[in-house]
Image (cartoon, rainbow, N blue to C red; front, side, top):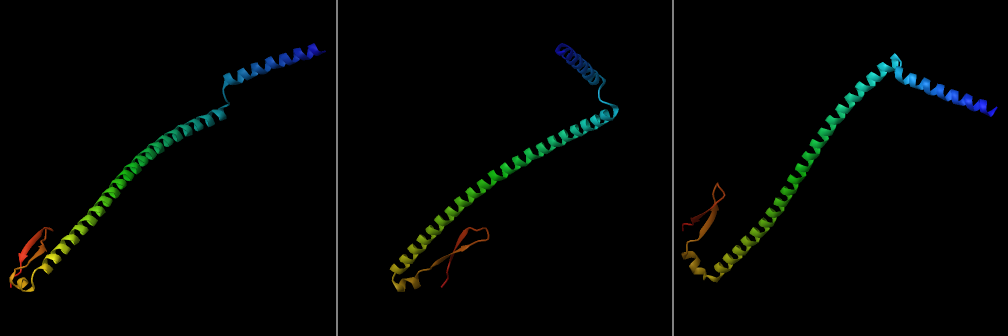
Length: 134
């Protein structure tokens, strides 16, 4: 009895594999074939779209990196300029204090006899000296 069932199961298994091979060889039914073609076309379009988006993403990342580098350079230059401005303001203050000390060390009656010069800024930003006339 067990032998008959084993033989029958084996026969069914062989028949199942034969039918499965025939189905694979015959291909999908016509409706599935059209559907498969549409899915393949859609897949190709989506792959192309994906590649285009990846290229755009890469370009955008490159642009961001360039802008970040530029920003860092601008901030660095701004910091250096602010430092330079502070130094120049301190230097100007020191010169003004020196001039005031020099003026205060002169006798009061000599200031009227001496021509004082004023520093004026020209249109190009460069200093010009102009003598005050009595």
